[in-house]
Amino acid sequence: MSRTECRSCGAALEAPFLDLGAMPPSNAYLPMEGGVEQSFPLRLRRCPACLLVQIDHDVPPDILFSDYAYFSSYSDSWLAHAQRFAEAAVGRFGLDAHSFVVELASNDGYLLRNFVAAGIPCLGVEPSDTVAAAARAIGVPTEEMFFGRNTAADILARYRPADLIVANNVLAHVPDLNDFVAGIALLLGKEGVLSVEFPHLATMLEKVAFDTVYHEHYSYFSLLAVERCFERHGLFLFDAERLSTHGGSLRLSAGKTPRPATPGLQSVRDEEAVLRLDTPEPYRAFADKVGAVRTGLLAFLTEAKGAGRRVVGYGAAAKGNTLLNYCGVSEADLPFVADRNPHKQNKRLPGSHIPIVVPERIAEARPDYVLILPWNLEAEVTAQLAFVRGWGGRFVTPIPRLRVK
Image 1 (cartoon, rainbow, N blue to C red):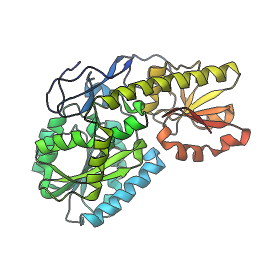
Image 2: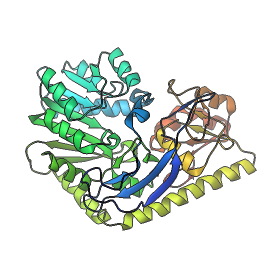
Image 3: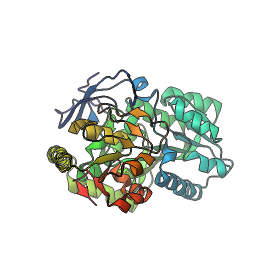
Image 4: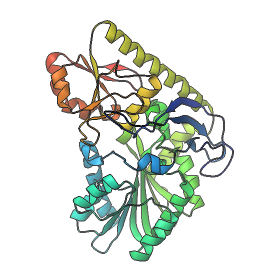
């Protein structure tokens, strides 16, 4: 379904400033043989009223998340990030055995397991049955459901108001933003704290991270847009932290009563003012840079093939699928993509149909180049695949510009 009105404030959207073409949902992995595939338009528009950047074609959530295959626990750096947050939150917010922590889109228990270990009551809300089952298997209480106002009322009736609600990298996945935020406002205790993390729009523009654009991400947030949405529902920001996760993210803290803004929050406000995110210019420049990324990657692959050099991929990440499909890369260019996640192995990438194999295949193939698709995890991946340098292999990252190391 295509939309012309803002999913946050209802104002008329501007014309698309980025059109990546039609492609399948980025997590719709295919079996090795057969499989039915649907493609949908992937375009970005900006709301001139509340400044929310969003896609203009909504794919129904049951298509996107019915067999969601992203498991947070397969990223070592993400597990460490979650543990640091949990330890800090316990001290900062005074959480103990009498508290109640709720995580929305809790995935496989990667974060809440730290609260379970600390003896703090918690509940995960996760719509994907596959990853919810993985969370329960490690002792994390998890319920399979999409979150919104009705879900919040149900949890409130059976449990109690939350002292801490965590929503990491989920806001972007929500088609009905107002219902989701209204649910948070209902479930959050009077003195409770909401902690949200999301890739920062400013960083996406700066790093040309268009590969974070996919159908599962309905919205792309600046601090400006989040603040306007939250205040509409009686939630007030008081802190902001810049994070390195997902190439550059924000962690915002909010509550039901206004508190003095921290220097961190004011710093992000100042940054967005300098970048002029409330004007059309940064978005036009971004679209031009996206085109240059495609030109650079295709030129590299063509040159490598012409010279008889072999290129393989690493990381069957959603962001890689946006990149490959926008650039028109196929199995003829990348014979396979290796990934640690067994739920993705022995399948094919959506759109490009490139086979997903076990990481051991890289050592067998001894390629000249490994294209790192989750480029934000470059340090982690190059450490895992250090053996590639043993035969003179090199690593390639495509964004924000092509680099060979």
